Length: 327
Image (tube, rainbow, N blue to C red; front, side, top):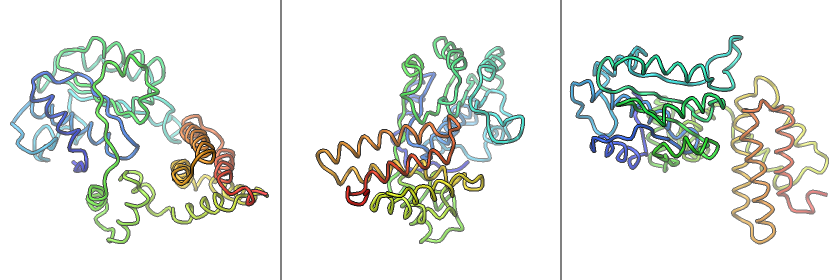
């Protein structure tokens, strides 16, 4: 399995729970997108299942050797005591469903209606729990309130504040933070063995502590996208020409990956600008950041029109320009 970098404290906390003999039944794994939350959940589930079934695992952290029989079953997707819930592919084949449905959550009863097959443990990974439709969230809550014996729920969340408070209250939260430069370098080198040192350094810079984001940005000419955004923020856009051109270019179907990169980077650029301001200018930049974050965070989830979203976000960038540049 892919190695996990930069989350030693979270790994130690989970291992302490295992060693105590009273492992909490539900773990809410939070943190920025792309830092390894889903990988942590996969490795934690595998470690618990492997140690429960044997032979004993002596590898450090959450690692399980690839040759371990439980690791082979999990890799093949055929472990009978492990279930994963995630958004399913649309029947049309065009992308993924908008949510994890209540029927998927109810399907967990297939796992819990029989005794475990290979060890005392059964594990459920939900990636991400943010994607649960309301009915599915309520159905999951019943499992968390009355967990079956020796059950382990690993819930990946990018926005835990949006979850039902009753779900949060029944979980132990583990936050995985953005990686430092050393961990980012190691993670990118492991994931991209063909990349040279210069590319690794460039990806580390634009990834901002998120290996997943950095890898997703590879080949998207993020430098040019950043340049366009910075020009709007510095020089304004009194004729709307710059933001119109950017909105058109990012609304094309083939530009979807760059559009998603724009959604992630526009609020970050506003936050970067806010750090250099004071007084009323700082307050205005923070207001823009809040608006930009809310819009960018909901654009994909609500299937908002990309051209309109880019135009509006670019307008917020233009509002950062000195007043004389906006005239």
